[in-house]
Image (tube, rainbow, N blue to C red):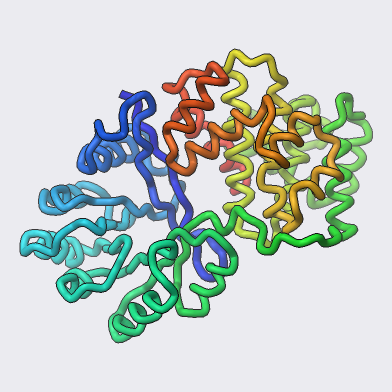
Length: 401
């Protein structure tokens, strides 16, 4: 059985990464009804802690994990480190004596408890008193309902998490109401879609991107560019000597680094640096997600039977969030980039021969197995390799740490 896990970031009010929620992605190739909540959570826990290792999937961030009523009563959470997980109690869990006792034991042991998809009900008071975090779904609750809930619970020592926050307007609304944590795809969308001029500094960075994406970049020119920019030179040496490459000897010169990396990897490095600088005032997870998508798309291309240039598919994933990075409509951004018509068609119109690569990646992120399987079928790519690709993409994204 192929166990698939995805993660969704949780941010602070300052848009800093606080935690991940680990989500069981229904096993590709199985019907959705074939796995109940107990099996989904136990499979996720087993894969995360016993097979892959929590560091590989979430780094040093704490992870929110859903627990069913049955798993709470069986005290499964005690088998896992209290500093690594937040016990997230699903909305359909009933506050029975057994459940309350299990949660009390967890709380006394130092585990954090979160109540998911919270809607106030007096019957939940025993669980509310044991909870540390209340999660409120922004798509299921009205603004008035949310404000009433916060008012009812303001006397308790609780933190509030707004989930399924899809726009920056919702993020700002929740922040002003006093929410401490935020979850959703608001960070991956432009703050305000508007026609605006991109600053000259950002234009120069985009031109550097244009240089590196030429079919035959001049390596001597690239060496000069890098050597005259202290920040880029530092980042290149840090990058080449990072744990990702496992070098036996330290690389100490720009020329050495360029020779070692070669054309494909030096292209990738410059793109990484430029995108990183363009996202300086954005959540770091936006850059990380761009890199995950880029590497994920590239791995799908390598494993598919489509006749495509893998470096072009890497660019497709990398630039899939450029509108959010620069708060500028995608068509305007694509006018400034020397990308192929096929890449532009996918990014602007969400169609064309390359769109299935992006569709497979995004549908996996968002837990849409049917759409993911359909895209993989179009690409003639093996579903059983998707999770390994996802983990490799996460590993690749760690080079920004």
